[in-house]
Length: 84
Image (cartoon, rainbow, N blue to C red; front, side):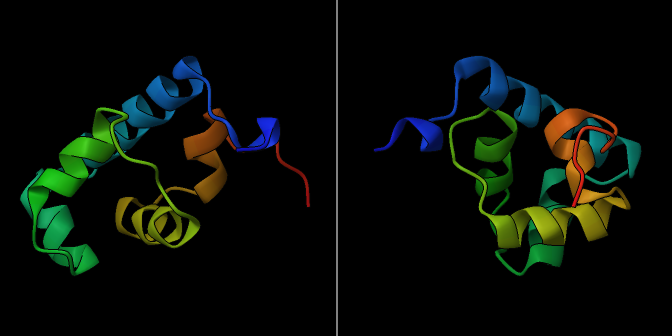
């Protein structure tokens, strides 16, 4: 895998923590999120929130909508570091 595609442990942990923080702020449990994503299994949400599974862009965009957060917030906490 090319270096630019590798995710560091700290990046993975930070993203996982933000996923959990956003879910809790939205007042949802893992099962409810899984149902809204159409995957039905809360174990996938748990794996994402523990950094055990890579998050793809489609999942990120769907979670951003469900949680009411800009997608960039999950990556840098406020979206300010990302410019189009």
